[in-house]
Length: 122
Image (cartoon, rainbow, N blue to C red; front, side):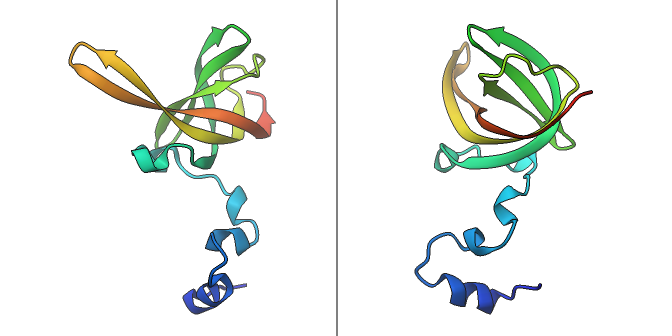
């Protein structure tokens, strides 16, 4: 089915997010490169697909680097069983963390994993 701009506009007049009405659209992964990194992106929910790279354990959690063809990003997860090389599709929330550095404060963007949608071993 093809959706024209007029049809989408007509369906969404006063109804909030137009993508919420398109079947399957909210479950499509975005690229890591397209994750919103500005302040307006803080708290946004994203779907990402990629390969697990480096990992670092934390107390009761871990952070792992999720990589796709466009880049990589750190993901904070309560799942301590994720392994390097696994393929994941996740739903997560964009978070910003201020980090003090020698050359001034910087903002680091990471993903708080909310749900694993797909998972396959190396």
